Image (tube, rainbow, N blue to C red; front, top):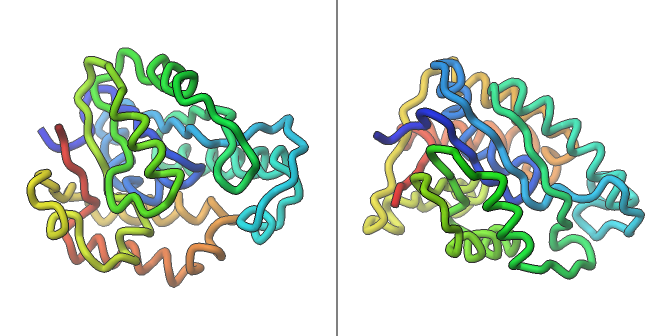
Amino acid sequence: MSGLTGTSVVVSPHLDDAVFSIGAAMWQATRAGHTVSVLTVLAGDEASDVSVGPWHRESGFRTAGEAAAARAAEDEAACRIVGARAQRLPYLDKDFERELDDDEVLRTVTDAVGGCDNVLLPGFPLTNEDHLWLAHLCERLDVPARIGYYAEQPYTTWRRTSPADAEPERGWQHLTVSAAAQAAKLRACRAYKSQIPLLGGMRGLLGVLSYEARLGGESVCWT
């Protein structure tokens, strides 16, 4: 069993990582009658007036609250396209001054994924500081669900090394998806309008889809 069957939660560090990384598989699963949720851990606090850092400033935002509200709207639109339920936690990412209590975050994530059949976590290449932190935190996740990992996009495409080649011992595989699923992923990714210019524009997005098509699909592995 390699796909998303039953009830699945895709744990996303930021608002866009899950859809960019595995949006086609999510669309295909929900179209087949399965249930998928996207849990974004570092979704930000819409009530915060903390000043933004360089990344969000380049996206056109002035405060954490402004960024969180605008990006949440983008996330709702993207998740609606792939048929997933959007869940967001109000923690700030590395672009802001923050102090995160790892134990508190882990408890909240554990509660949010409770009762699902599958949990997918960021797994490769973990070059983003927030992604690496979340992956290490979730090593302590104690739930009865099947645990899997996804190749993070666009970081995997930028690396130019597939996870199956870089980490063959983990059993990485490609989720075969239809042309319709790939088209849905493209539409969903385009909903993250504030982020696309910083991730290489439409050319960068199409590069991700082309890369995945050459591999045979989005990459996942299961424990």
